Amino acid sequence: MIVTACSPPPAGTAAGQTIPCVNASAAHHAYVVVQHLSGAGSQRCVGFDGATIDGQALMDQSGVQYLAHKLSSGQAVCQVDNEPQQVTECFPQNQPYWALFLETKRVWTGSTTSFTEASLHDGDALGWHYVAAADTSPAPPPLAHPLPGGGA
Image (cartoon, rainbow, N blue to C red; front, side, top):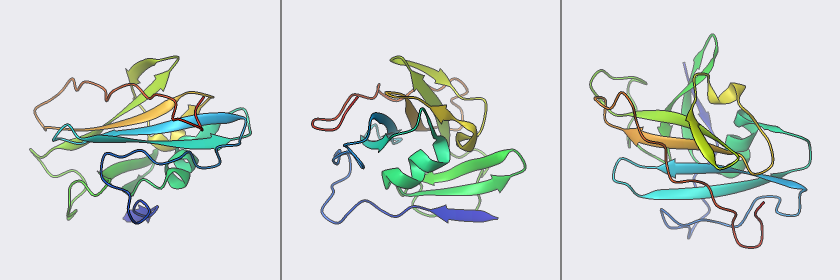
């Protein structure tokens, strides 16, 4: 089963452009960093007032478009920011895939769990990097940086 979540960026938001932080006046901020196969990327910021924000809430509030496939242990992501353009199968053999990383204290680590299991603190980030199927040790996306007027 494929679950659609979130909507595309607001009209007039170019690919690779950062948009102002959602809920910028909140006490804490977390980020979503996306790097496409082409190398193009974007970053989104979400403010939150609790001690943490979970990965699902961060993705939903960020406005980054994604499709997730429901698994028994969470959700696997099949599409982020409209890449690939069409999804007929979540994990087609020998095709690129979305690698997930978590940034904590300015250091990326590969995630071994679903993004729905992630718990992010102030300044942390979820990182998505679309990589070739043959890339068994993908590099993380660029580090998240506080956004002007709304960052941690």
